Image (cartoon, rainbow, N blue to C red; front, side, top):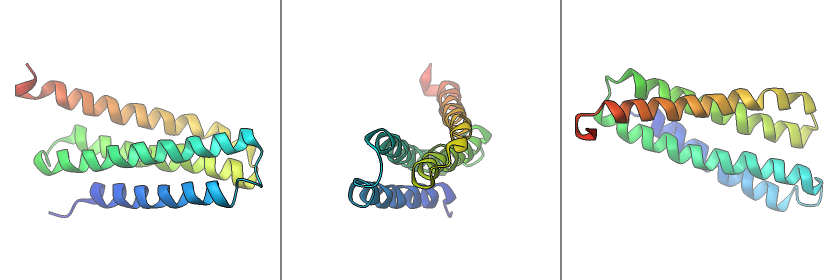
Length: 127
């Protein structure tokens, strides 16, 4: 069975490494220290949630019928795009209004983790 979440997690990790390297080398002298920290936050959250998405892919292989895990994966990927993507564009293109998008990505992350918690709590070996 093909795992879309594994593919998306691996792509997210790959691009996260690239964005981190880009920030460390190309943006270090271009961005202010404050904006560089914002950019690093985007990279950090992308990497952690890429790993989370890979974890969801592994769970999804065992529980492919679970709607909780399906939606957790969707929300986690949406969070990566909205949260990290908005921070990248905000810092690189100086589009401050994108800061309004970032919290939507954060809520998507929280929703994804909540769904994983609910899934775990419903498992028979949890009790």
